[in-house]
Amino acid sequence: MKLPDEALASFSICILLSLLIVAMLVGYLLRQWGVSYVQEAGVALALGVLAGLVVQYLSGDQDEQKWFTFQPKFFFLFLLPPIIFDSGFGLNMKAFFRNFGSICMFAFFGTFVSACVFGLIIYYAGVFGVCYQLPLLEAFLFGSLISATDPVTVLAIFHSLKVEPKMYSLVFGESVLNDAVAIVLYKTLVSFKGKEVSVKSCGIAVGQFLTIFVGSFTIGTTVALISSLLFKKASFARSKNNDTTLQVAIAVLFPYCAYMIAEGLTLSGIVAILFTGVTMAHYTVKNLGHEASSQLRSFFRVVASLAETFIFIYIGEEMFLANQTWKHISLTGVTFGAVLVSRVFNIFPGAWVLNLFTRKPEKKIPFTYQKMLWFSGLRGGIAFALALETFKDIDVEHAQAILNATLLIIVFTVVVNGGLTVAALKRLKIQMGYIEHNRRSYGEINFTGSVGAGEAGSRRSSTDRKHKIKDMASIVKLQAYIKAWKYNSSFEVLDRKYLMPFFTLQTEYGNGSRGYSKMSMDVELTDQGKPEDGEEDTFAEGEKDTQLEMEQSDEDVEIQATRSGSIRLVSSTQSRSEKDEVEAIASEE
Image (tube, rainbow, N blue to C red; front, side, top):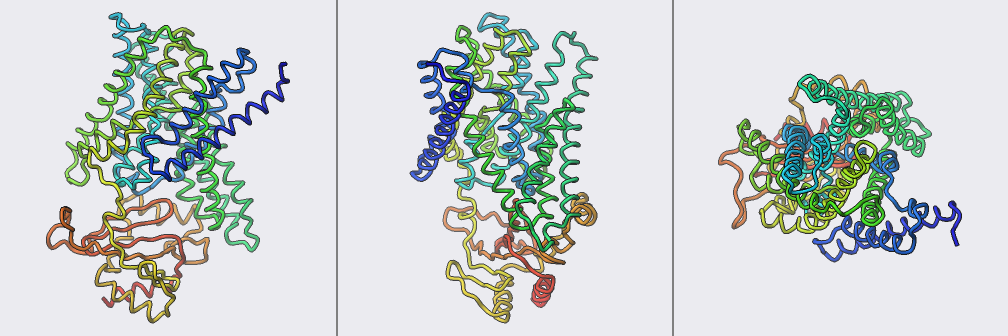
């Protein structure tokens, strides 16, 4: 008996949601059991493949199967935006911009080179009869979509193992910008369809690429700044009726506005919503109440996590339900080799150029990091969605061949590369357990009144607190902290003196949403100590305590000192009088 469309839709959605629950639960259990060679994305893929096989076996009706098949419009309008926004909103700003040059090299230049190398390999392999032949433009289209990386599995492992921040930021930063670049590059190449390729047309294509990217960037940042001014003028955080739900509801709408405006202007919604997230995290959040800010971050984190898992379930189902044919399997074999080779041209030449023009040894990208970057090039939802888009952009048979190869590449990289990530980290001797390995905690000083030593913290008086600070000041000069907190780059000075006061309630001393001149500060003093046996002493003889390196995430700021210790700032409050008190104590030292 054939079910009505409403009943069939409800039943299909219920099955997909059940698969989503199972995938997340199994992923949680695998993490609890310490299983590293199977990740949540791999579980979701496997469940999707199983579901697709069952649906294909039980029903041959296309109308019944359509509720299980991957819909590009649904992907681009509902699943992808929260993932990209959360990437920008949760960006570790300091780590990202500290490695911004390297990230741009890999995401822009590397992606372009990778797409070209891949396209040429596929084209000439077809010309010489090695595999199914694609026209040159379609080979480059294939190269642009397959260059979109999605290392969600690798990043999840990096986060759980606390991989060295520079390695994490390089992989994460490249993947965030790379997706946007791949989509814009695909759209640019599609515009060549039916046109003669010449120097002039190539110049126009480059101009179109820059127009799409810059225009989308402008829309994203403008919408975010408008949201910041709205929350500043509304003063929700300072009002007596601090409506948290209203703040979160309004803030959630702005990213989608940026996305839809960009798409409506035939620009890139992905680029727009990415920079909306980055800008809102920097300005808008400072005009929200603490609870509203926390709920907003949690909301997008949850939605992004659900969307990522849902995408892999969808991709798994398409192994049996997609409009495809397997008669061009030879193209898939060449694609595997082309992906590996093109990724080499993406990473290693760019890293060589960066290292060539980098003077400081600590800023160079080690060869082990380069290998890990090459290994981390997993493919995912964006590559698959663009492969489905080819059905309306190129010949159907060519699109089927591209879709087949893309599906198998995604499954292979997620299962194999994702499963071997931990082994690769160990093989390349990339540092893991970064925080625990480098810091041995003496205790914690909370300027709101508590001083703790390890886990045995106790509430103490203001006098005891001063005494504790004076004792620890011999380990880390608080005066050095205050000086290090002063930004040096021209944009940071501009941001601190003009942009931040204009767009936020925050004053020079901190977050104004908590009241005038209040500063978020908890301080943890930790002893670097002398290196243990087998550890390398990375500090030069006679190095001063005032030489500091600062790292910042979306929720904390960390200032790592030299051998003497470190300071970490987390969410709390400190009034200006308390700040002056700390300055006075540091000056006494």
